[in-house]
Length: 118
Image (cartoon, one colour):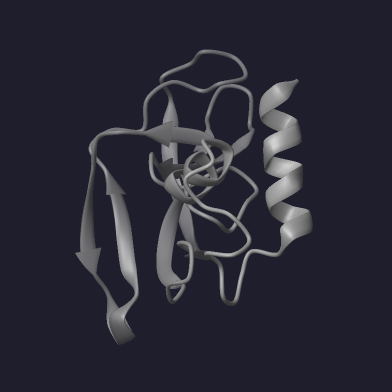
């Protein structure tokens, strides 16, 4: 995963947003700048007690080492469906189980808090 702060959100079909990075950056595995566009994939991102939003994120392939990487915007988390802000708010204690109506569950929020203490 490559996380970027420099991106544009462009509306795609059906209200799905495309995350367009300004540049692909370097390969996190070998450091090469030879990253080429490969395709895009579907991703959802949830906020606390809000509807999930849908995104397409770009996948790139390193021409040097052959590894595939997905480029996420800075509000997304690698391998997670909740936004970075949602996790930060829970860990900081700004959101508790009493504030949450639907998701995330208490077990998930406890896991985020425990990981932040490690």
